[in-house]
Length: 326
Image (cartoon, rainbow, N blue to C red):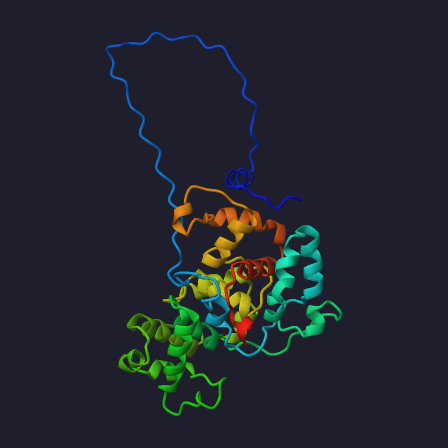
């Protein structure tokens, strides 16, 4: 099966239509009334390319940006999910998309994300079927907010300074320590600003803390919701967009079929991998940025394991993630 997908092919496939052969027909020439003015047709509106989500990193450079995983991978344990076999997922993907093997085996990034031991990554041991424990969703989402629109290095420095600003903070000696929603809500804006947080991010963190304090969002409920329901719930919180939700689903809840169409690294990676062509090359250093619909259509070959395909795209773009440097 060829993995080359042009933009026109993506649109044709997405539309589900077939190109019909042209058939010439005879038409009678109508007389033209020269007295009546000819109406000019209005030009069709130009299709606008989708904007980058406001919560996504603004740029992706080779080996310089700790992006998606670093933004949300602070939670310590894997989420409760449906039984998942990493080796079985790889076998399925390699059969459908053989070209993916080189990217996945080059770094083992997906295997690291799923927390498998070396033996499992090498395929000599079955994957763990039962994942125990749960994700600290508040910690993961709050960390995601602090990382928005920043490079990984800058965000990590601000996050550490912010954690140390809390009374009775143990962040200096305990790397897993994180404030409670109540503690975050009690912190004033000047303190957050002194740590490097923008006023807007401070406002977002308060909005998130309020949801956890009132109980409308909990780690337990999120772990037992499906992907679409989680997306609908979390994007209702001020400051959380679809990119942040996708990162939470991929790196904290470890959902296997996530395609972050708003992530610049994944967009560029898919463009190169599937050899996509289009008219907006100048928008990202000469690389065509596919639309969400084109990405969804191309990634059908990876379903139901689009997360692994997405991780491979980060590998292709040499985007450094937390699992690479941990």
